[in-house]
Length: 236
Image (cartoon, rainbow, N blue to C red; front, side, top):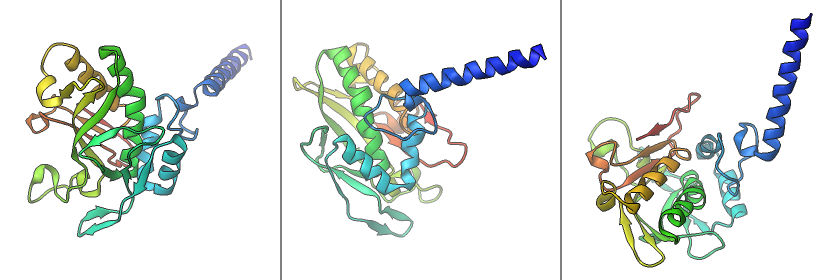
């Protein structure tokens, strides 16, 4: 009986601690609703990836967070295409300039990019450089192709706009930081890039950097691949 009482007491205490922590940090609980304005929690990445199957919810979250965007026209091209694309707009309470302008991605990727900027990229820029990032250079999102441009094999997440390739960053003073030029150099720029790569791993289903292979020497590949019940994540 005493053993049972002790176990029940420990279970009750654990439940209370989970409840108390969840009240303060709902982002750490799997059953709470996603809020793009909250800090990154233990389940933020999985909730962001889940938006790949719920475009209306994703767009509502972007609006609530103050992201300016427009719906991108649906694309149909055989095995390729998308119907949940959004295009980042200029201005707005919470937005950053992408170069080239008018970046269009799936809504789930756009949501993760937004959180990445607010919670990872900007804090890292302030920490390393004492200034904000004002622009992000990219190589695009949608591309109707298989992985690595092969003629056979799995289709790339780019074929459904569920991926984006990030090439570099522009600071407020005009300084440019590039994955190709700064990843392997010692110093603030390299430390910044490594920090934001690590932060991306918490938000995207797949994060690939120059550490992965030569094909990614000049960019970060970020995608929201849906991987079923396991939900395993790739971070290199």
